[in-house]
Length: 267
Image 1 (tube, rainbow, N blue to C red):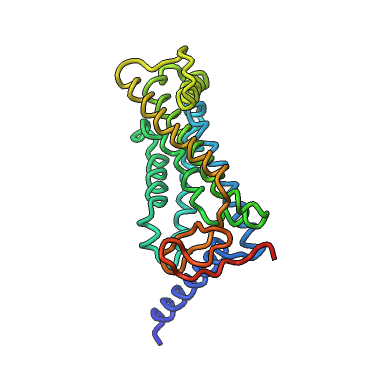
Image 2: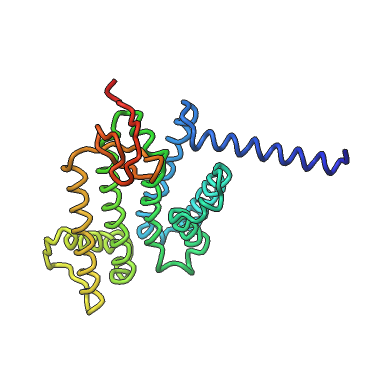
């Protein structure tokens, strides 16, 4: 065998081992995998905190270094998840991957995407779609709270996205913390329809922003209330149609009638 062929085989074998190791870390259920997934979630939360604090930090001399460091972390995570996936094309087609790609672009080109940087908080929504986050819920017996937790995350994501939008387009002249707090105050008052009236957005664009915020915010509150107060359902993907939510004592899938074998966690 030629030396070039041997090198090619060694590189292929090394890549296969790397992908297998990443697959075990990202999708495994061993103690080492859970520790890795927990660290990944903590890093994600730290990145999201940086995104929320960006309006306050963006005038600091060290901001670009922080920005590019976060870009390196996001890029590394994206590459690792691609390598750990059994179907890279399917993963790339998922909305969460599009969100991550967009976030990476805003981090690599912060000046060009300055007016869209508020959408970085969508990383929180991506995290809520991560299986590793909910595995820790299952480990601690919090599985019934998964749907309510997702509703809370959706509401928080919406609040911070709207806050960033309002700050970017209406309160940018009030640099730093004061302008961001005013934007957050307006968003919370509008979503809860309290309408204090001491902070309002000017012009037609401001009124339309307030209307859209109230309509979407109310719907998210309704979903949160439904998730908290309606009867608890179990998460078990139907092998036939993929429906995930079922009654705890369901024998057949209500969507397609397929016979289910839901594990009884009480025994």
